[in-house]
Length: 367
Image 1 (cartoon, rainbow, N blue to C red):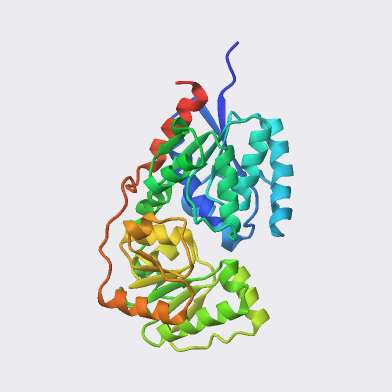
Image 2: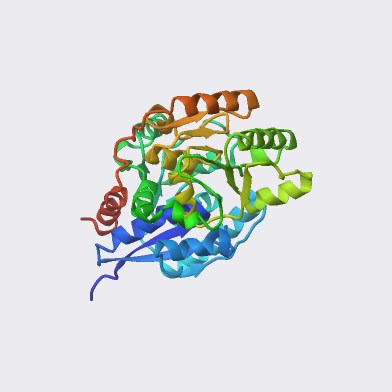
């Protein structure tokens, strides 16, 4: 009698998970003795927010979709836990692989740990040290439960060691998001966007805003939008609006009829990369965009008071500027005049997924 094939279960939740999981799934295909299961929790559940990512990245249709939908953090986490527990009991995976810091990530880690299934966490060790951020709670809990900790940078290693993680559990592999970026960069040309926006390479800005701390506080949101409008008077500003943010705009009765401001629906990965790769500057509260702009060498102003990705500041092209309009505009003017030098962190080289796959294969096969 032969042993049953070893199986790794990957958990997809929000949009950023797709670009992190896709290269890992591809890299594991080099190991035919290990099967893979793809579980989509449905945390991002519409075509614009999730469906298009499956198509772009060439991911197979998920083996299971939990369809949890939206809801409070507690409700969403609970639904993922209930659904994933059933999947794990039925499928008996040998390891659960989670990425990032969304509710689905933490929920899956809790379920697997309670079922005594080993957990691997990609992007382990990132810390903003701000527990007001729901993502920070998700990161801390997930890392505490994970057996394998894949880190993108030395600061992440140091954070985990300071929290008592076993050194042998930490594997610095680099940034898997950069694998996806470098894969699609050759086709991410501005020509893709010509029919939608009148843009010239290096002569426009890209803005994203979606974090509750920025868009749920009416005072902060109005302040940031005034800054965006002011920048729009100097150069075109493309702002793809998250669905949740658009609802908040309507609730607050905010006026977006401003010169130079180009609002858009959420874009697919390649279309959005086409915008950011050819922009003069990016302004964002997104953690992933801090990393992508660093890899691209594009100046990024982070509209938050802190970052869990300090390597993008110490080694990249990111500056954390907060939400004060005067500070943002001063940094904007400074970086237009003197752009930061490109200096990508070590191991952000497009080969992170194979390094992850090798560790996962050794773990589940005992090789």
